[in-house]
Image: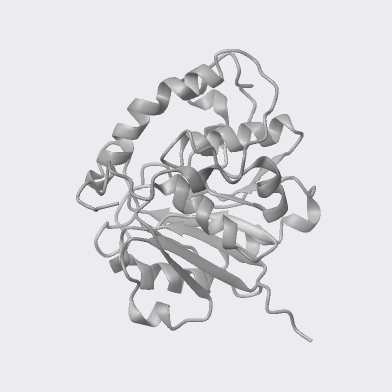
Length: 270
């Protein structure tokens, strides 16, 4: 008897319903040999074809991206979790290739799904010309490469996992993403660094598997994200102002946070 539990749950906080059919079709193309579910958390209704697809789960929320991702994780059913964004597309077979890595690595190890920014048109998700992060050296995916991460409490050899795939039980063990950060960037660094302090290893996918439209510092709908970074950066810097022991988080903490992210949805009543 075949199990109806998918191998992979893809967690997608989203504000771009116009992109989601192309996004979902790319998941289908990327994940042919493994079963999956995509959990979209959004204030906006999904396109009708997605609402009818048994592989799609929809949760309506105006909360910040961290809360949305943790919310999605809390209802995920699969063995493996992946965080993803709605402004891009997967390369064909790329998810299969990433999941093929897991039988060869430890149960608490993580796969960093290598991505490329600025290579797709924001309105159509069709390819543009040169991309901003293509052909980056292997060192790009380490803390040492980034000046903002050169802090006393950060090992320069620690790897990044901004698009991660990991076992759901280990994500639960870590306590989900850190809710002190409203956007999933600095808290993904905290997650990856904490995991490595607990002994996890992070492995990169062998090729770029996801291409997106976002260009750091230029994508207009990321102003709310930029402002959050400015406000929350001192928290991150304080955490890593000196070497420290890894701390597991409270995976229920997101439930006590506001249900509306006012930085982006200031006109929504609570």
